[in-house]
Image 1 (tube, rainbow, N blue to C red):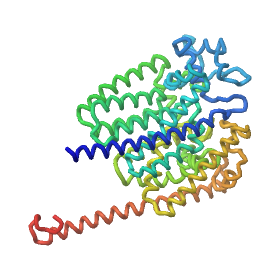
Image 2 (image 1 turned 120 degrees about the horizontal axis):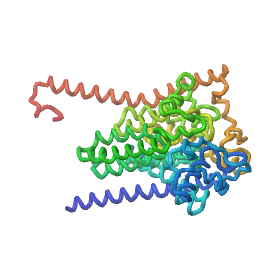
Image 3 (image 1 turned 45 degrees about the vertical axis):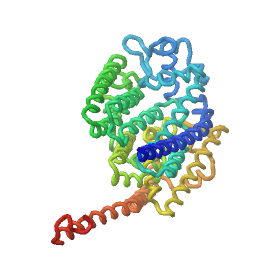
Amino acid sequence: MVRDASRYIRQFTKEKELLLWAAALFLLLTVAYTFSIDIRASRGASITGDEPFYLLTTQSLLVDGDLDLQNQYETEYYKSFFDHPDDLWYQSTPTSDGRVLSPHNPGLSALVIPGYVLAGLKGVQVQLLAVAAATMSLAFVLADRLTGFRATCWAATLGVGLTATAFIYSTEIYPEFPAALALVAALLIATRKDKPSRYDALYLAVALTAMCWLGTKYVALALPVAGYFLLRTDWHGRIALLAAGIPSAAVFIWFHLHVFGGLTPYGVNVVYTDWNTAQILGGHVGFSERYYRLWGLFVDQRFGLGRWAPLLLAVAPALALLSMRTWEQRLLLALIVIQLLIATFVAITMMGWWFPGRTMLTVLPLFVVPLAVLAGRASKAMRVLLTLLGVCTLTFTAGLAHAGHVGEVTIAVDPFDMTFVPFQAVAGLFPIYTLWTAETWQLTYAWWAAFVVAVAAVSWPESSGGCRRLLQKGLNAVGKRDSGLPPNERPGE
């Protein structure tokens, strides 16, 4: 009994310590993200792109109790949050019955109702920055569970959370960060140490359902997590997840067919008027002209994640380590690869409209795990290099924040034109994939070579160690077999 009590106290102390580390991270990021609120999106308005239409739907839900935006356009309610001198444009065409719908899933619009009711646009931005900070804090908890390197995970999470992409999108009205929160929460449920129960199945169904209502595109991330959970849980958990998930999927499909006339809301978009779901998906998918995004999403001079956050350049080789370790880490690797493929071959563009990295933002918090694995097992020299990359990342984010606040750049238009000296000093290392010149190919080949060398450098110790362990086991087995002694008398048994 005394031993059990002692074990319980140690476990409680360990969990309390973890929560304190997560709370500190949440507070730091919340303070940091507040500095992104007043950075203007375009020269004419503080918000732009899809943002006004998410809020227009929020207004309609509050005022009219429906998704029809016609009343908002007629009364110009949108001027309470859209400060452009011109009227708000139409992003969609009227349906056959005269409704004007936003071509976006309604999940985000419903999510930000509390913030909008309290303080309009500013209230929504504060609510979303809290969501972003909570997402990164939970990502730290997930990384700590999967790696065991607590201090390293905390530092890696802070580094990822303060990348330019995370900083900018923490207060932008887009569904990526809320979807990331749902994804991280689902992973915490699916990867718990004990076998997941029927109650965990219900919690998982809620998290994955919320993620899908934020965007149909997130179904591709929900399915692997659900599949992994089904493999880990018992029959009670499987039945519970299917009993909750199948009706949820049926409601989702019925709603979109009934409201939007297809499985996605894109059918009402002016670009896809009268297109069915198959045509929309076919119009999105492309290969021959998009393959370069597989690496361009990281190293493009204007829109690459690694260009804006050099720390993330270490993620690519670090992913190789996840493939050699636990099944939980392989699940994260699969999710990152799936999102990378979607960003490469399905997303219309990686070059705007909006700040770089949005197509990868949903899995950005998962980058903490490969970074922590790499840093936790790295040599002193490698840790120094990662620290320098982290410092450079924070410097670029600070430079961008300053340039945005003083009006030097606008985030959705020309952030890459900021004159911040450290940022421009390394510009020549990165190719520009809007200009396919000889220099573009030379820099591309150089990055390919660097990637191959980095993967070999970080994966060889792991793979060679595994080979040595397997060889040693084989030699031990042979030695025991040939010793001629009974099994219970052989050395080591």
